[in-house]
Image (cartoon, rainbow, N blue to C red):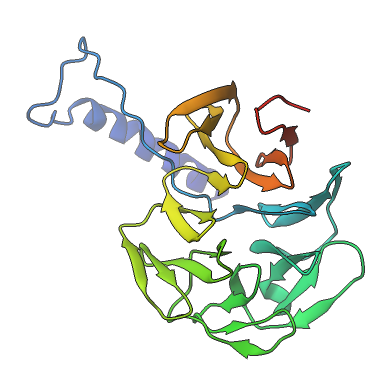
Length: 260
């Protein structure tokens, strides 16, 4: 019986191969000899890979494992925790959201645990639960949203912003700032905006990871400099431009993109 069950999927695959060869070609499809012009499409944000940057360093979660690297050494610390869904910085501490514990916990320095329920997103000021309700890092109830945010961020104005249902919302008054928002949140000096690629806008310039490169932009969006770089996230740690890859590689650049 076990051998028969093993053979069934193989037989189904063999039976479907001839049908795949007979599949109709959609009307208007280009011939195989024609090469279509490449179209750059922004990859959606990976919910299993998130990062947070602060003057103290960078924290990130990839595949449920949270880590932190503090400047200036950027030595990586990855404590043993149940699966983590998001990270953030608050009051100099790197925090991780652990839904299985119903808590947020610190990643290094003094060990702290705050019971907050099943959290799906963190900002620098609060933790957002599955229903959108929010609490501070002291465990006190605070203003949230209706529904589970896909991402949260404290903007340059000190206000919280979230991506929810394809929209960018300001939490303080529920204002919808963007519809059809991109999958990434960027902090700006006056708030936050969405984008199609990871990036950061700060006092030292604008930077993004785009088309296999780390780019420095001018105020009009023109590329001033670029260096080869794989997928990841980018942020500012003091005057350092710091990137982190899903594999946990930390790279540090000057504001002119010279790697340190």
